[in-house]
Amino acid sequence: MTIRKSLITLGLLGALGLWSQAPAQAAEVTILVNQGALSGVRDLAAGFEKASGHKVVIDFVGIPQQNEKINTDAPGDVLVNFLPTFDDIVKRGKVVAGTVVEFARAGNGVAVKAGAPKPDISTPEAFKQAMLNAKSIGHSGAGTGPYNTRLFQKLGIYDQIKDKIKIIEGRPVAVAVAAGDVEIGLQQTNVIQPVAGSDYVGPLPADLIEYGRFGVGVRNVSKNQDLARELIKFMADPANAALVRKSAMEPPAR
Image 1 (cartoon, one colour):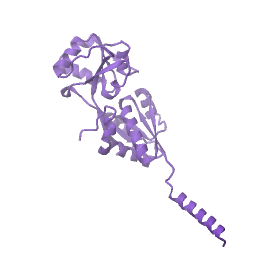
Image 2: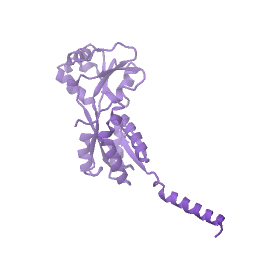
Image 3: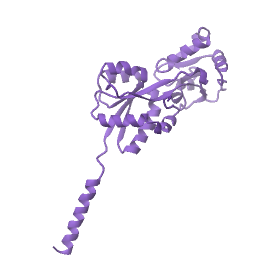
Image 4: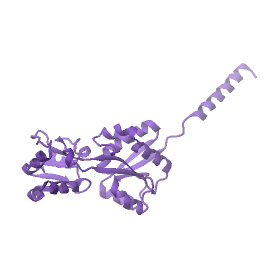
C-alpha cells in the first residue's frame, strides 16, 4: 500500500470513529401549560435544553383550551397544571399515574396603574385598608383568583367590597389595571409583574398568602415518555430552584 493510500485509509477510519462518538440526535418534547406557570416553565425549559441538548416546545394556551386538549388527547408529552387538578386527570387516564410531581408555587401580588400612588400592603391591616380604600378591585376567576374571595372573607371585608370587585377573564389582571378598567389588581406574582403600563406594588403579606401549587406529569399520549420523565425530573430538582425563582415563582416548600 502506498503512503498516499495509507493516509486516505487512516483519514476514513478517523472520520468513522468521530461519527460513531457523536451524540445521538436531539429529541423534542412538548409541554402543555396555561398562564399560571408559563413564566417558570419557560425558564426551566431553557435550562433543560442547555443541559440536555434536547428541544422543549411550549404549548401555551388558556385554561379552557388546555382542558379541551387534555380531554381530546391532543398530541403532547408533558402537562403542567395546578396540583389539585391532577387527581381527576390521572383518574381519567389522561396523565400517567405515578409521574406527577410538584415543581413550583406562587402567591398573589398587587398591581396599580403605572405612575399611580402605591398603597401600603406591608401588613394584613394595611392590605385590608388598601382594599377598603380602592375604588375598584380586579382579580381572575380561575387559578388563584378564588383565593381572594376567601381572603376578603377572612379579613371580614367581603360584604363591604364585593360590589366593586370585577372578575377579569381572558387577559392578565394587570392588563385591565393598565387599561384603567380597575384601580387595583390581584393575581399571581409571576403573572402580574411583567405587564407594561402597570406598576407592581408587591406580594401579599406573608400571613395572608395562599399559594397556588403547580404539578407536572407525563401525558398518556406521549410518544417519548422517557424524555418526558427526564424533563420532569429536571423541573422538580431542587438544584434548579434558581430557574423557578427567576420569574417570581417559588420552589415547593420542602
